[in-house]
Length: 217
Image (cartoon, rainbow, N blue to C red; front, side, top):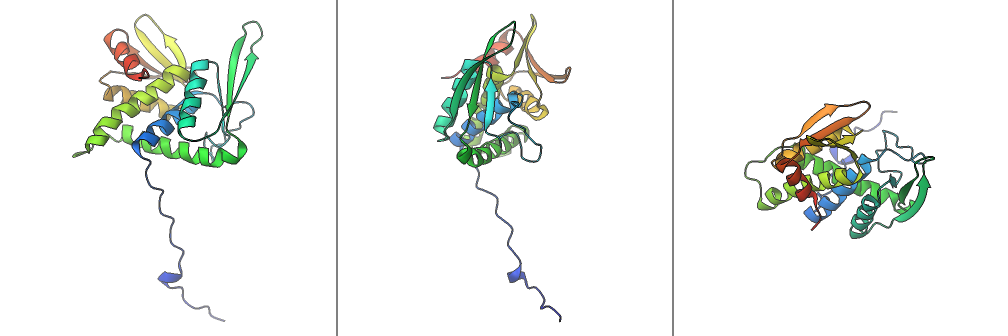
């Protein structure tokens, strides 16, 4: 028996993309995404490439100020989070701050961070837009500062006499930092390292501009 031909009205409509985040939400979600991307995945959080780095809802920091900043941002985004402090290391002991989003909130958390990262990365890597709105011209440097604030808090510091460097395993975040530095009128260099990427800015006025831009209010 021949089936009837399918009409255009019978075909499922493609899902419309979610609306863009407002600038305030974007800045907070983008900074959280950068914080998570600065850290290696915890042993209990297997970050498969097909689900992205946020699906497990877990991040671990060895600095209290990085954990505090992430908690502050998630509170503003109405995402509950649990904070557990443990000790690590054998000869050299260190604090490990483990933040975990309750299971029932992880899907919303992951979707929010994925949207924040995607939109923020596009804003920074896309280059200037002719006729851009006043809001976009204002917020693009703020997004750049958010990325650098996350990197300075949670990335691997590589301090030398002539430069300030950040070691990262995430290539995309390294590219965002380089472009963000340019928006903040600071030259940055990206070099491959041993199993990582190194983003560095010269000492002196350039380092001062980056750290001043990333400083909280």
